[in-house]
Length: 134
Image (tube, one colour):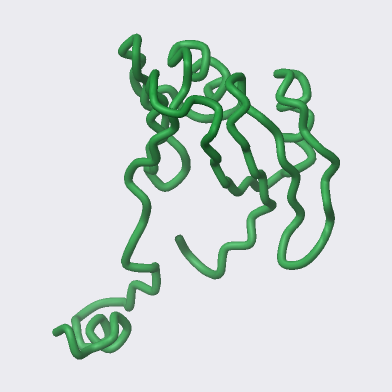
């Protein structure tokens, strides 16, 4: 099977062809100084809180990807690059949360801006430009 592309393999199987990429991201780690504070920030920004364990918390993004914020490491030196459907709405939400979002740069293939989380980790926010089902 390794010599076949994903599409060739799936087209030889019964049923519709699944054109989604083979890989998704399971977990992304982000070092923070206070996991509960960061979990609250990201939850209010629009991620789903899965569990807060005190020194670490897990939040869910679209597609089942989990953001793990954990105390220690290089807090404030991380970055997170995300996509959203309504970039103007999330810009307003992050403004309310004190994330100091920059101006929205409109362009191709998407619009984007940067902000910071409570530890100063960089948050890069892009408008959605997915190519097909994900």
